[in-house]
Length: 321
Image (cartoon, rainbow, N blue to C red; front, side, top):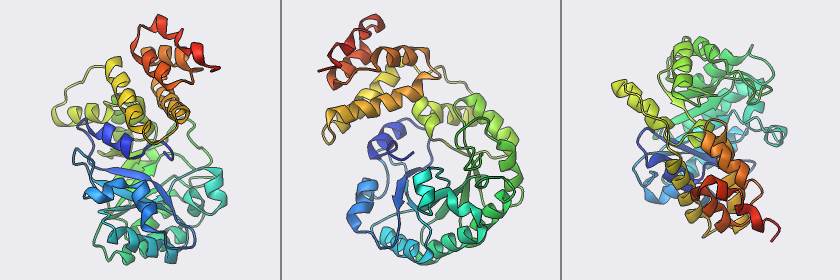
């Protein structure tokens, strides 16, 4: 979720009840202890008790491979007020993997254990340390070994994305494999991957045995998804479809927050990225995306989110401006 789930997005998504906690984009750890400003840039909530404005805890995520450097940065994060640390062993990006980060460590479970143990030891278990993995790098044969390595290293919970690194984000998600892992671990296991709807949640829960799930792209595609799942969990009631007005409002509020710090064209690009995730499962979002996909003017784009869709087709008139 690099470049997508920043503090503004966390604020907007947690305004609606449903989330227990959130995780930042990863802080890339290489060969040095990073300055405080890097952590604060990724996690502005450090200055506000590490919670969103609605009070949802924010855990800071680290991505790296060297145990000693990870430990130094874990201590730095803890001193700055982090209330939870998450270790990213799931990122499938080729650039990250070429530089020995993310899912590349899944080739050797011993490295996963060493990284987790270094971070857990560095914070003296004063704050929770969690980890996220995939079902292996090129194959699933070491999925359980990697999961056990994270637990043995001291992870207090484990998120499992239901694909290998080489499978990327291609369907299907192998939720049944998460169940195989869960049955062999004593720490909580959280399912992740292709949970776009309440029906997906139910299937993932049934196949994995995990009550809890981590939402990424699904929460962007449907801002009410966490609320929908939580409502069903607590009362077995069904929340209706997320109205386009709610989707448009969250995009407008996101733009209002970002336009003060980013160039307008960059904000338009981020809005298109978010709207593109919405459109696959919402017909009105699909219409708006088609109408606005060539629009480059921020004000025109925002107007196109609320005007009648036929008029929205005319909104990109300034695309060559």
